[in-house]
Image (cartoon, rainbow, N blue to C red; front, side, top):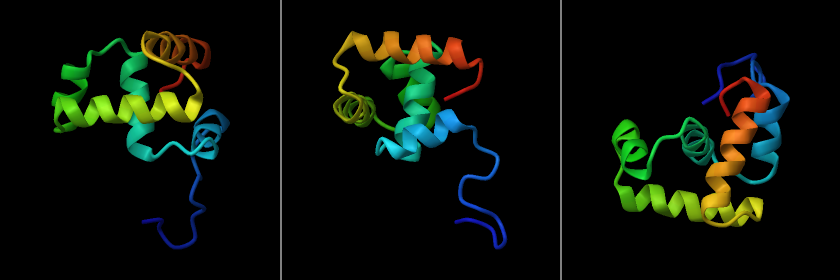
Length: 88
């Protein structure tokens, strides 16, 4: 829900907006950010209070939307996070 008078992306930087434009959901962006921090699927599941299977599904969907497979996704998320110096 967006507060009245605020734009949906107010306070977001262009990198986050570009992820939305690629079709990633807010949850997928959260998962991608945590992958970039070096967290495992199990650790991400615990921090987001979700099952490991749900996180695995998010990872597959993120990879599909970005055209990245498997461990390349973790590598991409880590590089992106370091380059931006801002959480995805």
